Image (cartoon, rainbow, N blue to C red):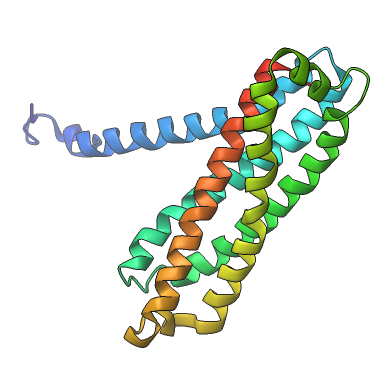
Length: 205
């Protein structure tokens, strides 16, 4: 319902429905993202001291790396179509994806030492009680995420080396390979996060 401005002059100052909807969408998006990013902090409530600190550090690094990697991977689709406007943003995001993936792997190796502990370690328990989790999910989680760093380093170097000329017709093979590699990083990061959360739900550190 539109209020007549000559009867209700203050109606002109009211926000439009589209503006209200936009504020609600952005607000819910920020709230959802914040809730997701704070997920590792629940480890602070865990009775295991190993899970409290290793879980928070590695979980935070893994979630941040995954969020940036997924956003970067989605930009690979317009890049594959030759969109040059996203190249400055994509170069920066690819660099930070690689850095965060490296931090996630380093913190993961720290947690992995506790995972392989001969006494009270999750690895021994899983091999005895749920070998499928260790032999499939943990092996996938352990090795596939390692591809994110070399792939990210290669993509970052290519994007900086070629610059805006990567979208030229003569560089189509390089463009295609870079886009596919960025998508692969996204899927490796997502797979690593999902399997890591699944393993942690079955047995903590």
